[in-house]
Structure formats: structure tokens, C-alpha cells
Image (cartoon, rainbow, N blue to C red; front, side, top):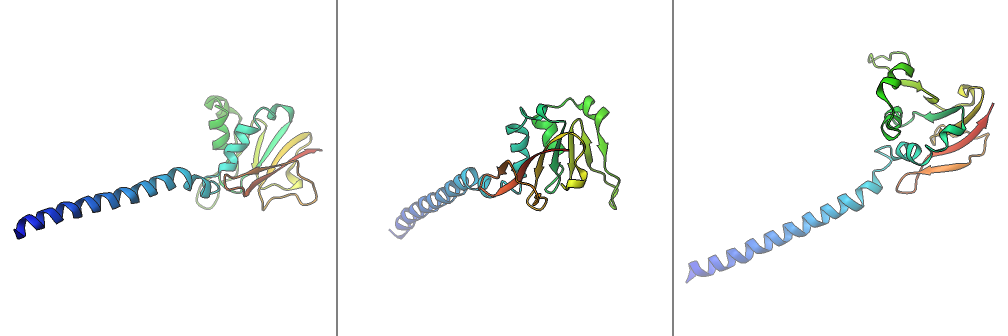
Amino acid sequence: VYITKVKKYKKVLEFICVLISLVFFTNYFLNFINVYPVQSSSDWQYGYKSIFINYKDRFSLYDYVLISNQYAQPYIFGLYYLKYDPSRFLKEVTRNSVDKQDFSSVKSFNKFIFEKITLDIIPEGKSLIFASITDKLISRSYKDVVNNLDGSVAFYVYEYEK
């Protein structure tokens, strides 16, 4: 009698454990799909993706496109989302000088310039500028804002003619 009761409770206990595990996994999965992308969009440099997807049709209207390199190496996003020809990139690329760790980053290619945004680096001509929060051009009014998925500001967008 005792053995049959233990087997019966064991099956109920196994069912409860599986059910609890399923509930936890479902909660984790739904958070991973719905919450995580929003909360971590700034960490994954979502603003760079927005620049190259939402503004690519406007790039041709400007002599230069300046993009803050505050968060990462944004040229990678440009190459990917613009489907840029690698051989063309290799012919056009200019790099920053080598740093202490023997790395260099991309400074520019084509009409794109990737640097800390200041008024001093803006070349002659018409420029579209994407400045990070720390690079914001206080003396100028911005035309638009690029937001992360959580609504925080990724970049301020300026048009500037020199």
C-alpha cells in the first residue's frame, strides 16, 4: 500500500515540477523576445542601425555624413545595412592612427566620417550629422532625434552647411 501511494505522489510531484519549469521557461522566453530587446537596445547600438536604415535615402543629399563613434565602430553598421561593396570599401577607407593596443579604427569611407562630433571636424560643404548625447552640439538646434527602442536618445540629428 505504501509503495503505491509513493508512486502516485511521485507522479504528481513530477508533473508539478515539469509544470513549474514550463511556466518559468515560458516567462523567460517571453521576456527574452519582448522585454530584452527594448531594455538592451542601447547596449547593442540600435541607434546606428536606425541611422543606416531610416536615413539612407537622404545621404545622397549631403556632401558628408558625420556619425559619432561614441558607442562603437559605426562603420560596420554602414557596411552591413547599406550592403556596401567590400572591394570598394577597401579602396576608400581611411583609418585612425594605431592606439596603445595596436588597433586602429575606421575614420572614414566614401562620404561617411566617424569621429567625436565637434564643430571643428565638420568639412566644407553640406553635412548631415548624427551626434551622441555626449557630442551634442549645444550651439546648434537639432532637426531630429534617433531613439533607442526604450525611447532614450541615441543621436541628435543636425544639418550643417559650411
